Length: 125
Image (tube, rainbow, N blue to C red; front, side):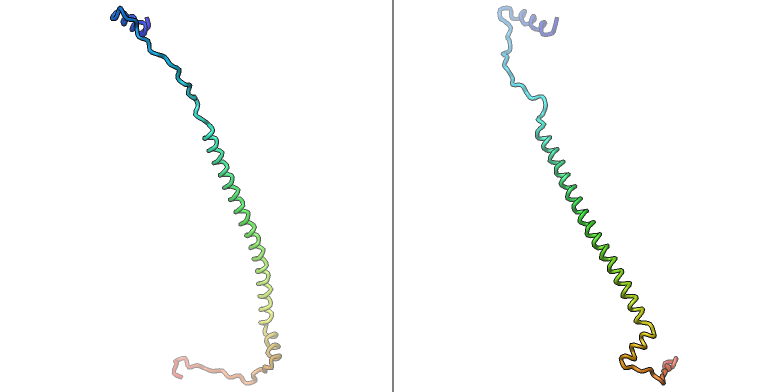
């Protein structure tokens, strides 16, 4: 005998004139067994969308930096070439023969009697 049947039989013995009480049953609305997925799906899509936008912004920024770097490298190469040309020009103009010719064109003449000063190593005169 099941426990419920035994309890019902015991109740009939204790109260012989009364009928056993039955609980009133009513319908309970069915609950959704699964939680709603729409908010979770929206959240996941939002996070993925923000991640993609962030990656796009990062990639764009890196590409812009790459373009600037290429421009700066090109400018550096041009400046390096200009420096080499100017350094060669300075070396050419600094040659003794060129300096002497330039001095003559400006009206300078060589000193025929150079004077040398001697400084006393002791510092007394």
